[in-house]
Length: 83
Image 1 (tube, helix red, strand yellow):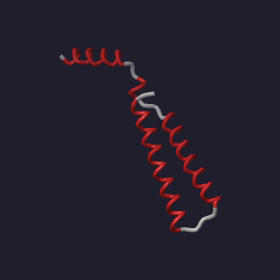
Image 2 (cartoon, rainbow, N blue to C red):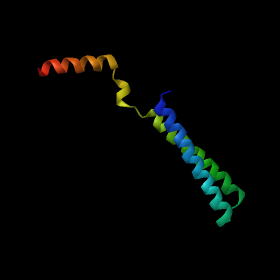
Image 3 (tube, rainbow, N blue to C red):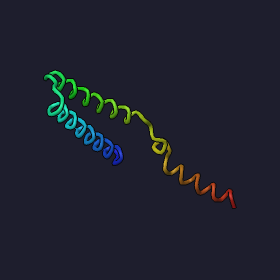
């Protein structure tokens, strides 16, 4: 796992945790909901987190597709061609 993937997952988890807590506070203090609404809210937050995480894992980063040694060789040969 790369550092940027770990950072994304940690940030997503924190964001969804804060969103869940905010929803629970709103449902608990200002709006009257039954117990099932709290369960559905939790399930929605978990589902959204999983969907976003899976979407991010399937998204391909173009820099990962390029071989670093090949890129270095192409940069060196491009400089020679310009001269």
